[in-house]
Image (cartoon, rainbow, N blue to C red; front, side, top):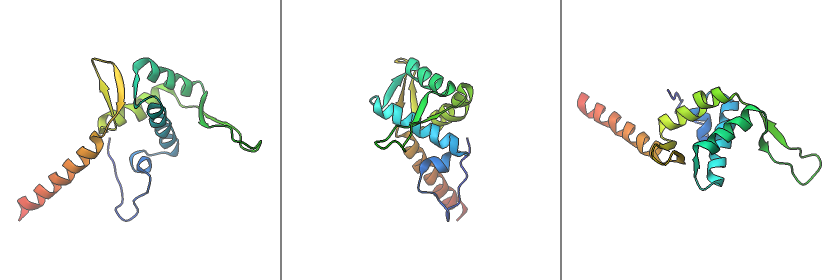
Length: 130
């Protein structure tokens, strides 16, 4: 996945930097919240259940509020597109790790370390040109 951003118009939200559409941003936020609520780690079955709920339009984006005007909002997102456009890129960028032995997905800090590594690569490139 390629991240393109403008240093002068950098959004405050990391999801706006990473994902192309608002719907992808919402789904990614929902996934991270779901994982966070489940101890930052979920199994393959739980991930599949999450994707199925999205596919069937049963995933809740906004819960029902106190007043009758605040209605519950649900979202629908294709299961295959979820895996192709949300989960796989998040794994590839280091936002989420997958443990092959435990068969679990886990929120990761690897993305931050990779961004630092990319910055250092750029500094090395600049030093080489001097």
